[in-house]
Length: 139
Image 1 (cartoon, rainbow, N blue to C red):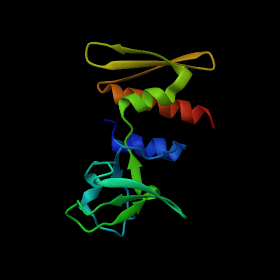
Image 2: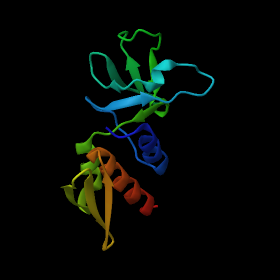
Image 3: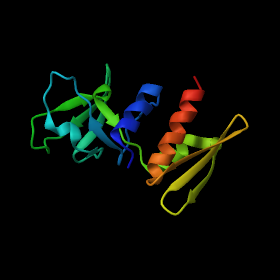
Image 4: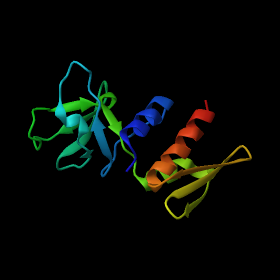
């Protein structure tokens, strides 16, 4: 799983999220709201947390299953933690290979004829760093 810091960087770079069953996220509430649950990882699921379309956008509704009182949060108050397969799919045609090295994984991509590599012990984090580079170069 990618780090919260990388997930926030991807969001700030412009990565959009359309919540789907199985997606993981953390809360990112305003500083004045003291909530220990920001460190918890939640999963979108029809039984517990579902994405609901509202006139103002998408809300993530907590269906009374959490131990703390929170009915729903807006998409802006959540940080998506994309899975490894989602990150790879988002790289689209730039993705070349994932290589397992001794102590790390290397993701190779190609952007506008330039070969780039990103290494990390967690393959999801390597994919995420590659995606961040792709998004950053597309602006």
